[in-house]
Image: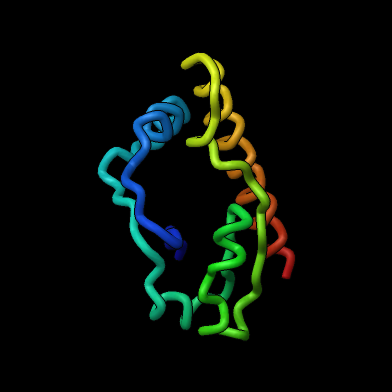
Length: 110
């Protein structure tokens, strides 16, 4: 079972909703939420996606959890035309998808 949360809640980015919908995934009802310390304590893996999250993740609550850091640029910080920004969101989506599939394969071989 996977859970998603952040160091801060920022609201759902409409561009993220759009590019996920392009891939057949509806996240429109999802909510941006802050990390629940109780979930951290129970986690087998803690995956951070940016340097700030890596630095501020409350991983000390669960020293046994395997920590993984995927150093991704925040697509919400992208600049340029709307199409250029959408491309950054798409690239980020594909990067995360590949990393999740790779992790899934690694876990199956354990």
